[in-house]
Structures are given as C-alpha cells and as structure tokens.
Length: 332
Image (cartoon, rainbow, N blue to C red; front, side, top):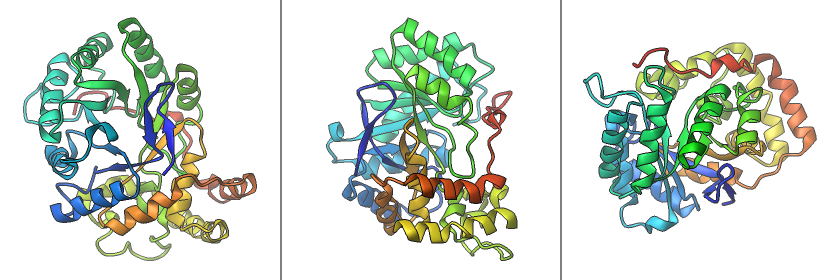
C-alpha cells in the first residue's frame, strides 16, 4: 500500500480507502462485511470511510464492530453528516443542532471517541454557512474530530468555507466527489480551486458504479444480483452509464488494461490516482477477494501514451459539466 497526504495537511491516508456505502448493514450480511474489513486491513488499507445515513445508521455500527480491537492510532476513520437520520425536521442538514447531535451518534456507533475526518455530506442551502462552520469548529476543539471535510461541494462553496475555516483556525482539508474516467466534472473548477486552497480529494465511485469493471455488456441485460438490478445498491446512480455507447467503449478498454498488466477494475482505480490532487480512491466490496484485487491499483503509474489512449476511447461519453456537482436545493 502507498500513502499520500490529504490536502495540504500532515494527515496521511492510504491510496485505497475502504467505504461501506451500499454494503454494510444492507447489501451483505455482517459476517461478509467483517471479512471484507479484515481483507482491507490485511491488504494495508488504513483509511475507512462511512456516513451516518448509510443503511439508516447501521453501516457505522457494523464498521465500529469490525474495527474493534484494532490499534486506533493506526487507523483513519471518516464519517459524514447531512442526509436524514430520523423523521424529525432537524434530523438532517448542517444546522448546529444536527451536527452536534450527529457527531455524538456517529462516535457511539463507531465505538470511538473521535473521528479523524468529519465531512459535510452535501452543501446545506437552508443553513447559514457561518453556523455550520462554527459548529464544525466546536466539534474539532472538543476533540471529537481532528479534521473537517466536505463532499460534492462546488468550487465557490469550497472557497467560502475555506475562508471561514481559516478565520476559525480549523483544518478544512478534503472534498469527497464522484470521479472516474466517465465522470470528470471536478476537473474544470473544483480541482483548480482545491489545489489553490490545499484541499485534497477522496474520490468515490472510481469504477463508475462497477461499469468500468467491464461486467456490464452492450446489448445484454445486467447480470443477476448486480448493482444495476438492486434499488438498495444505487441502481439510480449506475443507470446513467448503462447505454450501449458507453458499454461498448468500456469494452474497448480491456486490451489497454491487459497491456498494463491490470484488470479493468484496477485500471479504473489506478486512473483516478494519477491525478495528483486525489489523495485516496474509495472502494467497496461484498467479497474479500474484491478488496484484494482493488488494492493492487495502489502505486501503479500509468504512462502518458496509455492515458491518451484511454481518453481517446471514453472522451465522447465522458461527463465534464461542472454544474453536475450539486447539492439539493432544499434539505431532503
């Protein structure tokens, strides 16, 4: 495993991080989830990402049990706040009330007294940013989080939040966007702003919800039991990639992966790590062997000719519109 600094901070994270968005507490049984976390640890992954909303808070609980007994100082545990975790009007968003209550709930479920990174899971247009950042400052000063991050924020929002963080003297060091060969909306605005501000990316869906693994074939129905057939597993996210033009071009990546001595999944993960502003790529798994396969993308260097060949294949179906980085206009 290779490690990188997260943004312009001293915090080191594993190039491959383990995330449990659609697996723990919902898609797979707990024994399988625990086996995947063990595989991640055995493979050298030290960075684990979750959120209070995943599986209705159950994902945090499963991760807490899976990591129990591990040396806490040797792990980087990340979680998030924003999406609804209860029926009440204040059980969502980035108000001071919800942040202060949510961090305590997350720590209880994760069985730890602090998280290394606490992230705003989206931007909250219903709460003054000053209120949100002041609440985050109190979370940091109380020792419940070491660093602050965000997820899917626009460049302008990153700039405004970073200015407030500097005033409050708290470390805002990361953004967690979707990023892959097929989804490059952060490259035009978010990446340049992040490089200027000292913010690093922890990217999710580097395999475009599994499409870049090559298992979805043009002209054929999705494999039984795959993410595309399971509403609980993010079928709405993957739908945008499931057209024959995209799938045909993805199949053309196979000889390039073979040329590089990689599986298609490894190529996809290695590709996002070629961006120097990306500190870590989040991978999930329902089976331990998937973890062992994905970690082989760490430390891989793709040469310029290969990167150019990839671009030539996928460019016509790549999404680059920076406006696709968005948060709900109103709290969900």
